Length: 342
Image (cartoon, rainbow, N blue to C red; front, side, top):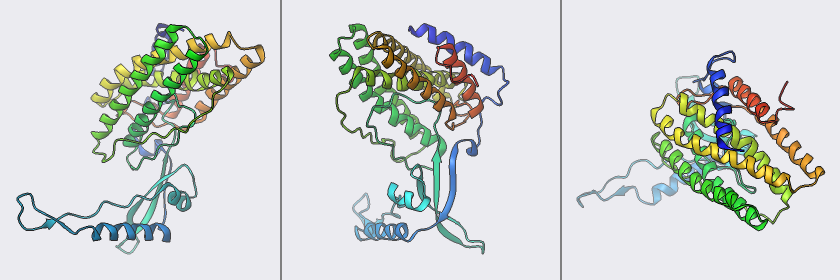
């Protein structure tokens, strides 16, 4: 598939979306962004860990030399303790959440420490996730910062995904044009990760580098490669390219619009590459295997529509109703809409 065809589909879909009929184009509220957002009482384990961390920070030195070598000056309070993922799981009773220690009113005019549990659902689509990718650990309570950091994490992971894909294509004798396009996509994703980190830093985040952990994987069959490409490329990356185009058009943040303008064009090329790989691989699979690839593609598209979405006008992200409408129209136009017509 050529990128120009995808561009045409995107323009038509976004033009229809802009006319309305599916609710507001964007939602700016925090409630539209987070699936889980509540507080629970402080746990003894987290309280003890926070106290120990504070004590360690204090014992490492309560003061620091002044710049001119004069009397010692106060080094300031230690950074807040961030609970581990395991501690958050025990406190919030949900493996998806991140958590943080907060101060909240106790009802008598004072404050008490509690645990804030929060989780942001899918931002609509996403890039190409390699097999073995560990979940990102992002410590922030700002929905936009979370979205940018998770986007940076996924873009960085996509670099390895395309490198892996190129190696497999080369081993299976794929055309050089596909190899070149895969190499170019990996270079694009590296730039995208930098762009997302840069946007996150504008929001005064202390740590904009989200570690990417990818477990080693064993060699796989052509069918397994085709299924991953169908799910991560033909479905998720294609939809992500459409959402990126929408962000380039509608984000209220000027720097987000500028970044997404280039990213959208490159992600559209990546999506087109996924469909080209799909055509090449399907021609080499038997009918039963092709049917399984198609089933995986439709299943992924259906799941995508069931995921929650971040709706934010500053980032140009649509609300859930608009995102579902765009997904339904996209995959119907591309021939993967059999399960999406309802």
